[in-house]
Image 1 (cartoon, helix red, strand yellow):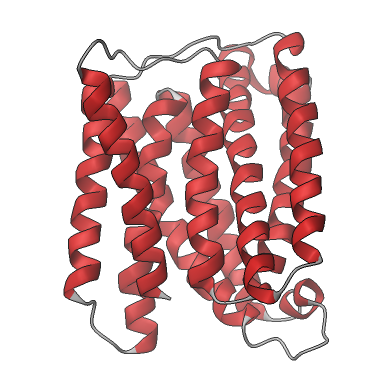
Image 2 (cartoon, rainbow, N blue to C red; image 1 turned 90 degrees about the vertical axis):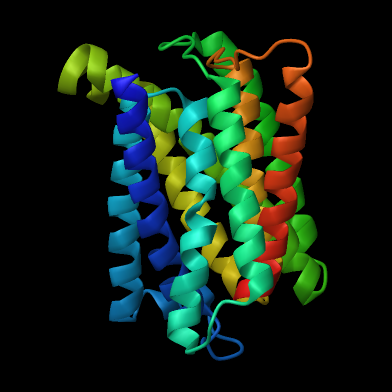
Length: 278
């Protein structure tokens, strides 16, 4: 129980720092002149590096959370970064949160609590075999590559939506790889960490995800790309948590109905908040 509490606290701290980094990097992305490279233009600005530094801190907090608890417990609380994004965005824009934003924020919080408390997630395989990873990685690379390049051929809004979805999916993989890396360090120390292939796969995935995310931010309004990011990440992470890590929710019979409703409410409230905020 104590480990789960620490996992939740570190996950919430990560969500808060993710929110600040998201607001800062998006404000930079939308100010990039037409025709310029979004990524190259962004990295020339000190505030972008400040936002990225905060994102790195947030990721470190996420890894610590995963070291204390299962992915299925930590991931729902990371979705709440959107709730922290709202007041930060309102502060930057010098406006007040609307009643609708407050309502959807409350519903999102309730949904996360239901998933975490009723779901009672338990850990799975700390060191899943490579045979279980290979199909998940190959399918992910194929599907996300097709989606990314399909989006590049479409209009601005659809490009932002598809690239946002790809970004969320990539960071879903990052979340699962992070859990594997955290478990490797916990069980075998620095030597075990440096010899784990998941560490290097994680570095590659995080780098690609950051570049795709910046392109998605630049493709259009954040209200288009952010919902796809916020929904894509937990859905992919949950799927991989079940398929690769073999983590499980301890839910039986009618409890699945409430879990399904809570997960649906997470999706709806996240989309609603994203469209109303930035």
